[in-house]
Amino acid sequence: MNRRVLALIVLIVAVALIPAVVHSDYILTLCVTAGIYAIVVMGLGILLGFTGQMSLAQAAFFGIGAYTSGWLTTHLGWPVWPAMACAMAMSALVALAVGYPCLRLSGHYLALATIGFGIIAQLVLINWKDVTNGSDGMTGIPAPVIGPWTFEHYNSYFYIVLVAVLACAYVAWRIKTTRVGRALEAIRENEIAARATGIDATRYKIIAFVFAGAYAGLAGSLLAHTTKFLSPDSYSFDQSVVFLVMLIVGGSSSIGGAILGAVLLEFLPEVLRPLKSSYIMVYGAAVVVMIIFMPRGLVGLFESLRARWRRGAPPPLGAAAAAEAEAA
Amino acid sequence: MMHFDPVANLQLLVSGLAIGSIYALVALGFVLIYNAVGVVNFAQGEFVMFPAYIAATFALPAVAVFGGVVHWQLPLIAVYLLVIVLMVGFGLLFNRIAYYPLRDRGWLPVVISTIGVSIFLRNLVQLTWGSQPLVLPPLFPVDTIAVGALHIRPQDLAIIGVTALLIAFQYVLFERTTLGKQMRATAQDRTTARLIGIRVGRIVAITFVYSALLGTVSGLLVAPLFTVTKEMGALIALKAFAASIVGGFGSIPGAIIGGLTIGVIETFGGFYVSSAYVDAIAFVILIGVLLVRPSGLFGERVAEKA
Image (cartoon, rainbow over all chains, first blue to last red; front, side, top):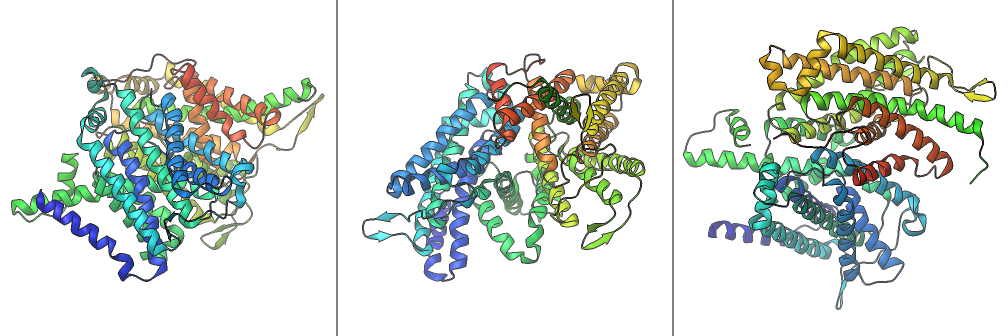
């Protein structure tokens, strides 16, 4: 256990040193975006990975957070921090309002009802011009300030995102390892059995949904104050799908997996530049292949490989996938 | 609010029923697959969009494919037959890739894999045909003709007619034929169906093919009214899903009535209330129904099987 904590600290320090070593603005932008996406994906992980409920509205909650934060700071002149808190609260509230009718029913209804909600939300962002400025987008969003420091540049904003990612990962870890997390897991494994043991499944599903919304709202606000420009195109169904793919690739019930998936897929298109125009298609194919052969994502694959390594047997080809399928 | 005009309202009703018929056909596809394998197929919209692209490729005088240009321009009936044959293969392949390997793993992996297929197809289409919308020629004129004081589109009537025929066909299939009875038995209880000698895997494959064909028919019918784009299926499928929930999920008459209801309300809403939010109407109805009567108009109490 102690070695794991140590490894984690080393990893965090290494990540914190990135802006000192990397001077490319472009790579730092990617890092900041990857961190922000990691928060959204962790939120989705609480809902899908921990609880087994599917949502395809993460991009909508992401957008609600971004626009709430943007509107409060540009129209009302609020400072960034309270606006960020409000953005998170707003996304959580909307999640509560949407989750309440949808989560009374089983998973399929939720999955498709959330797509419907996502479409409504994007239509509102496009058409509610007084608040969102429609397709022209919202501009002039300020950067956050602490005392004398303004977090204008990516190399400083990096740390705000890093702190947010760590805080979110900690909260997710607390949820996972306490009574709430066990209740969520029971619901994921067998909702009827969970209800039979006295777990109020609907209430817990709503809690998970609200957390997913709050995470996305915080991430949206973080994005608003770094890009300083918002456009409704960024909060489409496709973006929700990208979040889902990040989670599936990383490993849906693992916090580390959510972060890994987000970082990997944010950098992957840059690595695979020749695929640029078709990378979403490759995403689609990857989802199918992953779900068939690696149901617990990269994290699951690492774990089963390591388990084999420990036992001293060299993993025969394809056995990892088989072990995976068994474990799931 | 404008002056009430009975003729205009009757015209709205016809076009509402036409688009509602499309929703009903796609909703039937959802419900049949759901009943057979317990999973909502998120690629149902691509069952509508993909055949429309194939049809446009064969039917139009010039279509850009992979940067080149093809000039097949086959007669429309030949195109329809060709597309139907191709979509049978598509349905089989879809079952084999997206469902079959995951059949014992619960509903969530299958849902995710159908989402994967849907993303793949939408972007495959964009890569193959580009982002320029195509226009599929209609079997009947889409311009309005005057019937007394009414101005209606013959294509709308064709949609309603073909849908009615298909529903009648399906009724005969399910009630009178052995295959239909096997499909119903599989939908009711797969284990028991297998025990009495029904080849469940084959019936499931047939269900996917049938569902793909329902999508194909609706795609070929609706494409001339709109344009063929990679997004055309997604919104239709979402509204069809809303329709099937409004009707009562799993219920075949529910899917039909739900589809027609949503089509009509949406058409009137788009005309009288707001055309900017016309695509939101179906989902507002959906959320309203979920709140008031979660089992839908025709549904039995929603209870999960243990």
